[in-house]
Image (cartoon, rainbow, N blue to C red; front, side, top):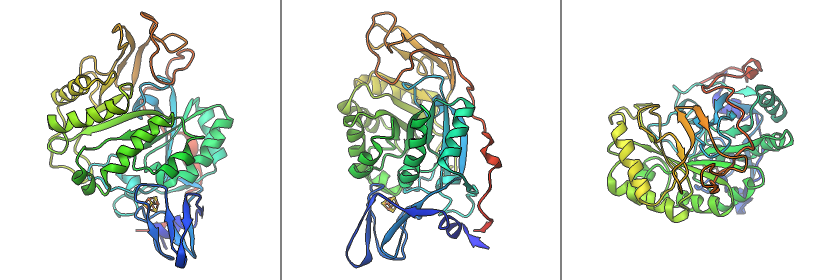
Length: 376
Ligand code: SF4
């Protein structure tokens, strides 16, 4: 019986984000590691590899697909109430001990992570997204940067069908991958996990590529929202939160910052779960730094008004939320405040058409063929 790696290597194609180097080496630019890979070897992500001087990359399958409310991604300033058809492959370039998607992201590193891949085409995925009533198609669950060629293939179909597109990413990007994605990706949610380089190194990355990616995404016109999972004892000091918030505000005070609650998951079971008081404190630090839209997540109904969107000029309530549920939507058809008329940054639909679902559910594609059985 084949291993997972062998099974995945049956569903690849030549990548587009790489250079050929001397002596059969290749340089991959899909993520901030920029691996220099000799013939016959894998990149750090374990899903892109050099075979005969060519970089081969994942293609033609998903390991997970789900219909999510867009609020779950989370995007709060992009089509509130929309259904986000979400898909993911396998693998990640980082290895965070608290990953909430570890079953897909760590499948190549951890034998206890099992999420069998399903063969599918971009056309099939998008057809199903349309049938479900989705307005947005999102690459998520694993790190989408490392599977960017596949995401672009799906997004080209999505655009043809009139859908918007998004990435839910750790933000470990490169100038090359951001240029490659720019024509096809509308919305980009990324994590700012810490403001300490040594902590990023514990997670398998470096801080500088993430900060540069945030600046570039904003300059290039992607719609950007940032999430910080607040982990007690890891990144919750006032000093670190102030430095994070000041950095985001220096890029743009209009970037929404979501401070969300950690709960014990995967290998990180030591810290206590984040309290609502800690989220409220983090949000206050964000606002004091000049950020105009700060939200608290993962604690529905327990952080006062921090799930809602207010006009930063006149404080009119614009979108009221409880968890993923949109209770009220009051933006005008032009995406402005009905009180003072001020434009609200984001990507807004001309009108709010309610929510198909305020909870995640599985679409039908799960009936498609699984790739053949594998051993760990
Ligand atoms: S995606 Fe990142 S980790 Fe994977 S091969 Fe490319 S540069 Fe290396």
